Amino acid sequence: MLFEIILFLFLGILAGTLTGLMPGIHINLVSAILVSLSLGLLSSISPIFLIIFIVSMSITHTFIDFIPSVFLGCPDTDTELSILPGHELLKQGKGHAAVMLTAQGGLWAIALIAVLAFPLIVIVKKIYPVLQTLIPYILILVSIIMILSENKKALSFVVYFLTGILGLIILNLEPLKEPLLPLLTGLFGSATILLSIKNKTKIPKQTLDTEKTDFRKPVLGALIASPLCGFLPGLGSGQAAILGNTLAKTDRRGFLVLLGATNTLVMAFSFLSLYAISRTRTGSAAAIKELIGILEINILILILAATIISGLTAFILAKKLSVFFSPKINKINYTKLSIATLIFLSIVVFIVSGFLGFFVFIVSTFTGIYCILLGVRRTQMMACLILPTIILYLF
Image (cartoon, rainbow, N blue to C red; front, side, top):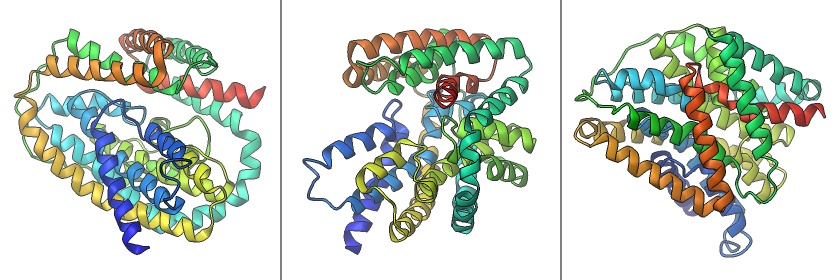
């Protein structure tokens, strides 16, 4: 059994590396496919091994997915905030430094999980019954904080309202398969790519220098905000980063550390949430619940071990991959690479979500472009998930 656990652990790390590097192939999609196959082709494989695979894939993904975000400007929903400070460093020839700041944040997150997992479980079990009744009001408060933290508050509200209504409509389109894929890929992926093509982005020669920053504030901010977002629906690492930065102000380099930490912490907390309150806050946690139902303590210990091992391994992989890509990125025709990435995303959306999904993808893309051009933080577009969640809990 130990051999199989190790095998699926490293298969998950490999899968997380691939999903992290390939825009549009999200871990939620892979997890959903695994669950469906577990009833047929994979029925002979123990659910425990599939769970180890999902956990190691998910944690690895949270480290690796900053690489396309920084070097290509093609994020998923957990890394969209890294584009501005990440691209700022990329244009200074310091893309590797940007990736390493996020990876170091993820490494801090792994250390925090190792120390605080069980104390947090005890705390959450006690306070969740009270929090549950307050969920929509907490989400409203988070939304207000996000909007008020902007310089352009009126435009921020416009973006929040527009994307919130878009999410409400799309998430209720009954025939649409995997609605989050065209919705989020359009808002955060293709919209950014099209703008980079229009602006004819040129990448300077990259160095392998790293940047120093004070880790105390960003790690503290991540530690305060991530549990809240990890245990509440509709909030992801983007919102945790905004909250964390509001509570513990840091510079742009520190913000990349904070975002890297929250990206990993929110994923890890979703597994703790499944054990503590039997609630799923990520697609990966939902897949685990489908596979095994109630999470027992022995499975939780395996999950935590897989989290720590895959996190340490992913840090090394992120560093090596960044070193590999950094000297090559300025030699690549960035416009052609962006067009190829856009075509790839379009094909993935069409295969998974069909004609209706492709139409949603186009609408979401133009909505994303409009919102980006208004000059507010892209995390405001996460209202596409937050507003439907608020309405669901209120009504």
